[in-house]
Image (cartoon, rainbow, N blue to C red; front, side, top):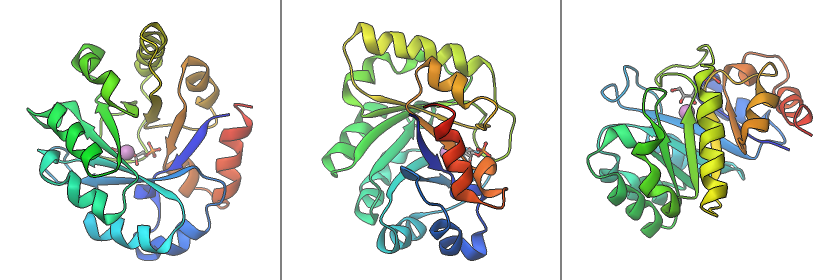
Length: 215
Ligand SMILES: O=C(CO)[C@@H](O)[C@H](O)COP(=O)(O)O
Ligand SMILES: [Co+2]
């Protein structure tokens, strides 16, 4: 069964904790951090991660969409992030960023945009706990799922098997009941879903539907 990480980018920012409390059965909470430079949008920061870590039991999966994330990963780990994701496109020093995440005691994730080939992260695969394949161009919730990400997941999953590695594959962007089975069958372990969960009346039911479709 697939793991589900609701993305709070689509939750009500004025009632964040209330929304979060209403999602039951999720495996992680996905927190998008944007700097207005790496992506053309602003979102949550360190204080939100700190607050959520203090008030919720669920593990925080923090997706950094910021330039030079290596300058901030230690602070996000201290704030309570369990998994920290850094984009290969966001720094000249991706291997150092991953090293620093692990040194800070968090799980390390490398992220690729739809236009970035897997060759950009091949060397990093033995070092990471999770790889995030973006299935939309990052910056906004509610975008259309890019079909090309299916073959990318299949190729990554084959590479993982061929090299005997154990990282999880996560997918982020446009996930719904229409494509969750397809991405699961391609090799995805963790599905991020924002608008599919928070734009519905019953968040818990949406999480359960995604899981049930991959039983
Ligand atoms: O990182 C991002 C967007 O950049 C995501 O985590 C979105 O928040 C996913 O939202 P949906 O596409 O599921 O609505
Ligand atoms: Co995200």
